[in-house]
Length: 405
Figure 1 (tube, rainbow, N blue to C red):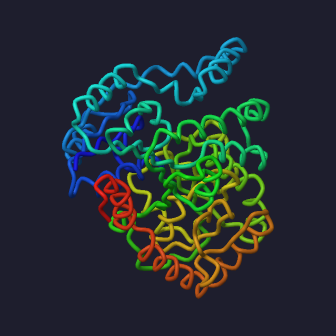
Figure 2: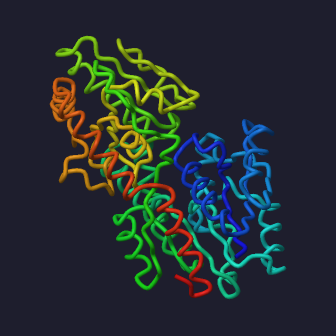
Figure 3: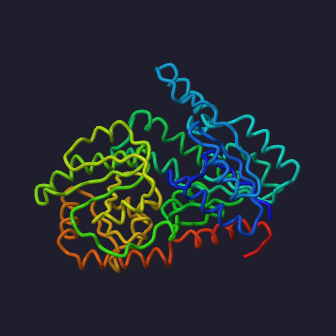
């Protein structure tokens, strides 16, 4: 089968964020048995070495330059103009800002020449390249990493919106957008049951498949020893709004309370492109690393991994990766979304500062509890959340074109 995969995010190396990790690992699995043509865009920081590395993973790689981001233009006039375009065209600025006319022409020609059996959009932002009539001649799949309407709704409800007025205005427009673009696709793929329930309200008769994220167990091996101590860690791309909110909340409201009881406690914030708000976290014990050669080394050296997410939909790669590495996890309901961790106990839940203090104190003081969470969590990942499992499920969605199971 010939599969055309669309990804406006360059998915290599698969360590820069959730979108890259999911896209790369699914294409890696599909490429074992199918011919893959990947059409993507490069930012200025993508190197020729990285392009060559990605080329080795697919049959045909087509790379376009990412258009200048018009969405960064400031000023009230520009903001009103972008909102007006959203209202009239029905497509969010975050999608339009990445749109490439040259990439669209290439895709149109490729489909017209009947060179593929399936098109997959890796993240809903790529839906703009799929014409409504495509599904008449081939199978069209959109891999929705998270519902844009659901994410906006959650940010408003949790109070972590960057611009509350803007998001209140955008919310009904995002609802309309998500309802509209889904109709172009033969099948919709989501990461959690929560997202499926959300999208089924918009598309009650559509084929919607839940395919959770996974972990590369070679990249994230189970650690062999428990280092003990009082080291906390958070991992994730540090220019992401949800991650920024999480570490700022934890550093300002939770860490000082823990350090009252355990003064030697440290907190490593590990991830690329730290935003100014993250770099400004100068509290004692806080270490903002920026991009590191190996996330797993920091995980293995930590006593506890915290995932204090207050917004953001979908299963969190950072949670699965910590579980795979054998590091006990303390996380919010958002950080544990889509994971059965309460029976048997695989992680400790915490949503309020006092909850985090209690849970982390228990893990600092009880090596047996750390060992229990470590073993149970690793077993969960091995049996339910590997990229091999996710890849097989994704392949099934694509193979529906031929009626195969």
